[in-house]
Image 1 (cartoon, helix red, strand yellow):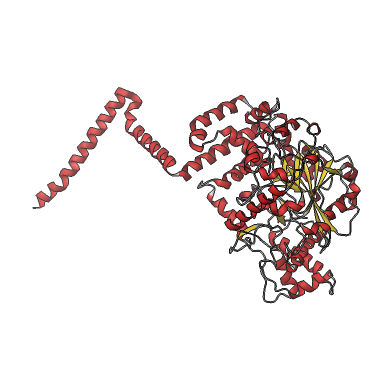
Image 2: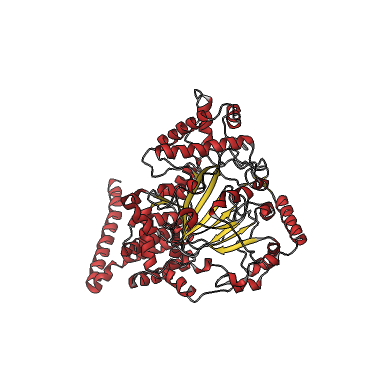
Amino acid sequence: QANWLKLDLELPLLHAASGAARAGAMGEKATKKHGAEGKKPKRWACCAFSALVLALIIVIPPVGECVSDVLLLGFLALRYSSEGLPLMLAWKDTVYARTESSQSLTMLPLIKQMDGIMARQLLHVEPGDDHITATCKVSMYTQMVTSSSWVGSDPLAPPGGGNLDTWDPVPTQERVNSYVQACREVYEGLDKGGPQRRILDKLTPQRRVNVTTPIPLWTSPEIIIKGRMERERVAKERPSHSDKWKGINEIPGYGHMFQHTKIRPVKEEVIDASEISEAVRQGKVAKFDATKLLGKELFNLTMPEIAALHGDMAKNIPMYRQRGASAPGGSGVESLDTYARKVKVWKQEECLRYPEFAPFRPFGYTEPKDTSDYMNGLKQPTWWLEVLASMLDIAWFKPRVGISLRDFLRMIRTAGLQCAVNTRRLPKLPMPKIEDALGNPDWLERAWSMFWLGPVADCWHYDDPDNLLIGVYGDIWVSVFKLKDRELMRGGGDRGCWSPLTQMPLRIDTPDAMTQDWWLEKFEFIHMKLTPGTGIVVPSGAYHSLTMADGDRILLNCFMIPKYKGLWDVPAANHSFYSSKWQTEEYHAMSQLKKSSIFRLWDTKQLGGYFEGFKLEML
């Protein structure tokens, strides 16, 4: 029995040994006969593994998205290196573009980081806080802009929005604690018998609708239908205003295109710079000579020239993209120095113009250089990058991503150029203090001015504050409707093009607008080119749109922030944001406390980080 057991154990081992010996002999023989072909089994394994990887990429979208991320980052790094731009810019542009819509596994942690920024609450009311401290903590979360909400929904925004980290040289918690201190100083300085102080003293310090939010733009399908019907009813009853139309010859270049439409601009009112304050009070749309307000030295300066004025300071001055400091990985913020360098390089490469954004392009109007401007935007700076872009298009981007790499890069360039910077962060600007230039009207607390940069297509919207739009550099076109038509034009929806609930068309210079939005022909608007040194007064609540085809253009955007109740008893208040229709007394007191505290924080400690949206920093 022991011998049989021994044989049972030995026979399999002998078979295995002989099999291994035969395989080894065959492998050795095959190697001698075919050389490297003797490794065919390993090659088949590699092929099988490659096929498996390709299958995973095709079947599992996030895996394919990872490949897109790597290819895009690698190509941008090569391009920016050849252009002498910082490699960190390639990382920022990739993260910024891919975290907006990507399902990539590599971007998932960064997307979660963005969610964390929006959800964080940096200040909490503690049991030992006195009333002023508690109110100041809550005031930091007061929403600064109106927005739509579905009837029955909660209009309170996440607490992190609007309170974002900056490049200011202090930790985040120290920055918000400094806000509370500035707020206490403002609060304690209020007249104890005055209306704002009395309202604040009685408030329960907590985030609430109509206290830390303006009155929401409540909407629903029924409200929108009713609003659109009312808009069309009013349009049918209004007489034509063709006698006020601007002459075709008064609109250089494309003026003749208005012959194809009844949606035509009227002649703009022109005022002296000294009349701007009164135009705001009256709610007038009016054109003015900005050189009479700010002097001539500012106009036609480029961003590279402005960066040069600031020397080494430019490396620490933040420029905010559309998603600003809320964008993950720091991708929404870059320095004035980097921004100026890329504008200079891309200007030399002639890839900064976006002709499709200019007026009447959807209607078929073109200029001779439009085609070359568009094609230059797709070119790569070297021949080998052109070859590589073509290879990546064929092998990956067109079949897998659905867009050519060249078009993708042009879109990324657009997003990277669309930035804003508060002019208070630009101390070397050759520009007077705007409050002084306006004559310090008794209703004005602050002129909140910023440079708004980059190529932009039409975006119909209205802003809560009154605004001065002033051309500084490049081609800029502006259109503004009358303030009194604000609610009719809103049509029961939201106030801007960024919302799916907006009831305004994307553009009004299209054949579709003539048929689908015919009612526009009964609503008066002005349309003009904002040449450098030209300005326009845009009242609070007036629908307007800017079209900017030059990637290096500069618009000076100046929001007029009034004092407490400064514009509540003026003619414009019948339709503007400054009335009880859009602000409760409690909200007005709280929002004014927040604005004054932000201004004091900057004036005393040079600290910012408080935004309308994500890119418009209030200082």
